[in-house]
Image (cartoon, rainbow, N blue to C red; front, side, top):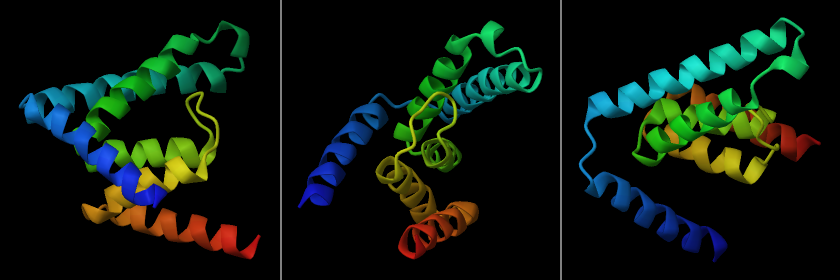
Length: 127
């Protein structure tokens, strides 16, 4: 029953965002912004300067990925799924949220999302 309710809520949220007739270029712009913020944040982490990393970069990356994902962009949905699956970009690990986003991306034909989702589910069953 929970999954039916969440799919209804998710559908309503997507209709709201899609109802504002956002263009493909705006979604692409959000993906580019998200990628830029993520790259800057990851570069800071790889330079071992954790205290100096701007946590807003991670938050902004998630925000822009989420906006694009809610509009139905399969790459953004995939990135949200990976971020939840691996606890990246300041998100806590959540297999429920990861499955939701990876499943949406897979339903739209994202090949890697299908593979990652199957692998994660197999890992959970075996563990």
